[in-house]
Amino acid sequence: MKNIIRKIKGTNDILPDESLIWIYFENYIRDFFQKYGYKEIRTPIFESTELFLRSIGKDTDIVSKEMYSWVDQGNNNLTLRPELTASVSRSFIQNQLSKQQKSHKFYYIGSSFRRERPQKGRFRQFEQFGIESFGSPFPEQDAEIISMAYLFYKSLKIKNLNLRINTIGSREDRKKYVQSLKEYFNKFENKLTSISKKRLESNPLRILDTKIDFEIELVKKAPRIIDYISDEDKKHFQTLLNILDNINIPYVIDHYLVRGLDYYSRTVFEVQSDALGSQNALCGGGRYDYLIDELGGQKTPAIGFAAGIERLILASELEVTDIINKPDIYIIANSNEAINLSFALANKLRHQKKFVVIQDTLRRSIKSQMKDANRVQAKYCIIIAEEEIKNSTVSIKNMDTGDQKTKLFDEVLDFFK
RNA sequence: GUGGCUGUAGCUCAGUUGGUUAGAGCGAAGGAUUGUGGUUCCUUAGGCCGUGGGUUCGAUCCCCAUCAGCCACCCCA
Image 1: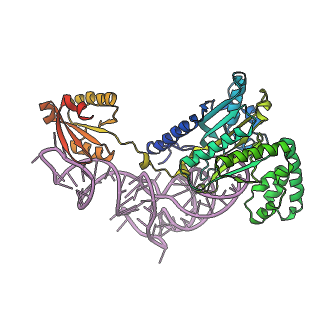
Image 2: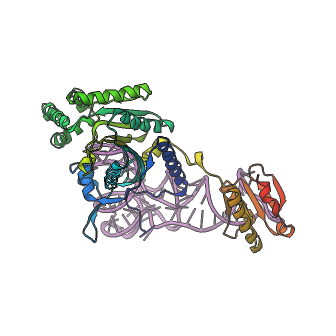
Image 3: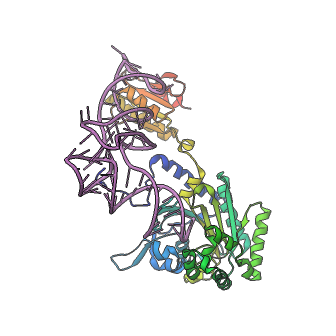
């Protein structure tokens, strides 16, 4: 294996067997979200770098150190998208969708790119899916999105689901909160880890999801954002929770759940599963009422979530054998004449009967072709050899029972009723 | 970017306290079976022992570097 070209770190080849699993989930995602009236939107895989600077935020890790960016031959600053909310928002604005109708509901499936060290459930090219709803500022819209996220995973029977919700209020309220959080942690500054000390300056909210035991204890007594937000925001949150209670969506209020991206406001949430190791978030999202305005569109409330397909597959524990599509028929032919006949028959069976039909193209012996038919788990074998050609017949063998019947060539389609 | 662990056949892994031709199971191909799979038996193919350098009479094994993979930190889907 010397001197071969290898795939880029953090990317994956999805080989045919595993591909079956991907197809299964992609279809499932489409079916599920379409039931709620959400329609697919597809946006380019790369955008102006500026889009991500303005939406995700310059100080986030994503923008400051994880983006694949380059300057093209025309001197444009371009970036492979690190997520899709920014792209979908850009598309919403550019196509002036707000002028068509009051509400737009989208789902998407596509690759994203972030240059991080690969890890369980984390890759440099990864597949995201998600939904975005534009136009409604009301808590029932939050409830729709959150229940869709939860029920999606629930319907796939994923174990140990954990829906965490919080509200982070308006930007102004958050500033006040961050200030008092700073003051609180400053009191313990000499006890904090060096990482947390840095965060005290750069982003005090991040201290809240520390994994160090004694810092967790400190966090438990830290100020809570709920005490800093406006009555209106509190009411929004409470109404949302009431709806979730009414429709029996089990959630945990996590006062210290903060999302990293700049554009969130009010409701934030995450669905976790402990099947994922350290990267336990299946999906994360929230409301982003400021974003469209900031990107130059008409002020439009919005909410959505993003989820990773790799993590979904990890958590689902679905095996290829659960969904394998066995071929219906394997045609065995061992002479030029037989091969000609097998082509004609195979195409009839494929296009008139909608069967999956396999032909051998290796000029192998009948025995070898039979072995191969067994290997691919074909349900039937059709044998066309000297004897069959002489009598204008074929031999049809049921591979499960071993039964074999001789049929006239013209009777084959009728045999498979 | 930081840290830990791991690199031997397509896959899962043995192995040599440094010593001629590096092994097993599974998988693959062919046969035993005069056109017929699955069980059984036989045979065959397939390895720069991740890569480069060092120590040594001699390295898959020891040392260094490097690359890759996994996991964790950071952060996030």
